[in-house]
Length: 504
Ligand code: ADP
Image: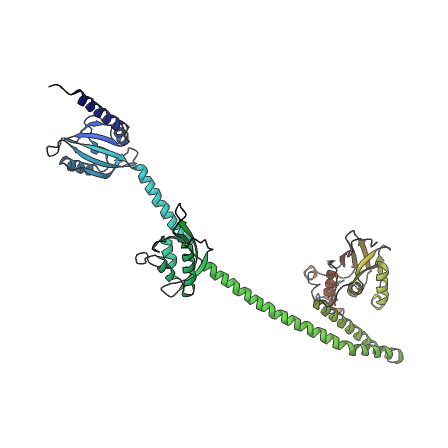
């Protein structure tokens, strides 16, 4: 019989096509005979099965798989005419690793007659499996992170208000994923009653396409407890910009809100206490000012009459302590009034520039009873000037020189000055008992008197507090350096109030 040349070409093409297809396929293809021995195979099959078997004619494929008997069962099913689809088996590798593959077995032979063998298609799914494992691991990691940070994520479908929640969402809202069906409605119902409208409004407006700031709301749990959740949402859109729904993040912020509330309460308490203390302080200042003022008038008259008595009466000796004590009391009252005036801000400074040495000399003559024959050295350049409120200057220097004389029973008192470009410093140095370091930092506090021998001297503990207030009112500072047994130096520094230090 003459063969048809066209059909010969077609058949040759067909064979070539099959060979080419098999050659380039990444799936392995093995043809097995009735006894399961390999008859033909492609390159991909050799590569895929290589860790387990070297494919040669008659090789038994079952040995390539970890599950030998499972493969034999599949082949048996195929040999009775069944096409076995997509069965997962593992190719055993000699390094102990398993390569997952999908097997499809197709029976070979004329349909309805004896099966002559089968074709086994082997698909490598190791990459796919690794991808799925990585995905599962990533999801587990997100779940762990959500649990740790007490957060959850969710999406809402605009069409029907249905929602999908991550595990964290169920946890922070205290609902069971097995029974709770998430949707806008059920979500809003979980909020504390007072917050429902705000939450509903946030979700509705976001579904309307708005981007709004996050809000905090309460969650009412079934067991009666409450927690705080912060929720941030944004619209989800398709590429045309139409809103498909929204996506959101929730976080349990109960700990933050509770600690903020505690801080707020503590602040409120502190404000209350400060207010009460201020009121008490103002009351005390007012009392001091009134009492001192009321004491001044009778005392002035006591001092006046005592002075008269001491010159006219032969019992002058008896009158002297009255006069001395009255003077001391007068100083105390003046100091109290000064303190009260400074405290209330009533006393404003009017600085003027004057020569320093003559001003101190005048002060010393006015307080001659303090000097009482002691050696006071003025080591100040003749042209040195100072710029201060004159009365404040006299109170400041009077206190410092007075203390130096009062607390050092002997030795000299030296007053020096150093004129700088920006300021002037005046130092009052004595050779008295000194002040212990532990007391030094307190001597400027009102009513503080360092314990020890110095307490024998009269005083109220107000002088240095007043000195500091006056100096500070000029924008200056006053410091104390002292060594026990060696003496004390108080140094005040006041800046030039006007631009030109020379005052010209
Ligand atoms: P007062 O002299 O009325 O006690 P001050 O405020 O002037 O009050 O001084 C406070 C305290 O500082 C004094 O009680 C004293 O202990 C100590 N002090 C002040 N000046 C000297 C000084 N020059 N030498 C030693 N101690 C001093």
